[in-house]
Image 1 (spheres, rainbow, N blue to C red):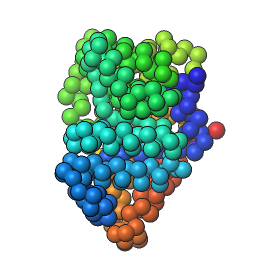
Image 2 (cartoon, rainbow, N blue to C red):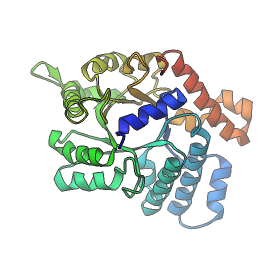
Image 3 (cartoon, helix red, strand yellow):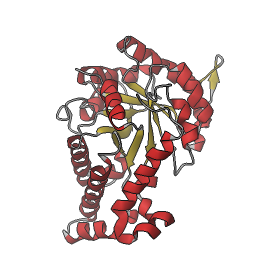
Length: 311
């Protein structure tokens, strides 16, 4: 059974891009036709919004599936709608898996013992999309409670050929408040990085990359470079490109010379590209699908200017 990283690297190589499209549906920003269609079927506010989120995200999946290797649904936007939202999320994940995309559920789960096991059972389907209720290939995880909280997730990742992305150096401005705290000459985020790298060395000693990844923001380009050296066998998930200010040049340090080792995420910049002046003028209000495709292609081209080409 190929590991998560082996499957991901194959998909990245097939499309020759590390671009990752986040799925961040926001009701007030959805295209008018999507909202109108969702409202026409009636129901509660939550049911209407969930219907719109599912339709919008599935349309994005259909647009980007031939272009990028993976998508990253942001669980919070669905969870806020309760059961209807979770049902919509499960369908979006299933639709994306059927389209051949790698799916990273951005839920940032983290807890101890049997609770962590339950989270892993819920999300980490891995290679077989039917092996967990939500069917994701990989899951984002918060390790703040300690390294023992990672073990249930790691065990599930190994058994199901799934992936994890541990929060190491996040893209938000306030990350430094905790993550830069030093003890014994080492910053907290460096301590987490060392734990993640060791997990990969322990479980995938013969692979170029293990399946336990690190979330490292594009807004910290120097840390990206230092963490790549510190974590040579760890795949990165890089948020912060685009709307948060990170550039293609900023993310270059996340990659190895062969163009492997990272996925670079863009969510709002692609989901709602039709609201940008350049695309609105080119495609008009009804051309939101064209705008999403154009923005995705623009991201791919931008990354290729700075990221080594995959073999």
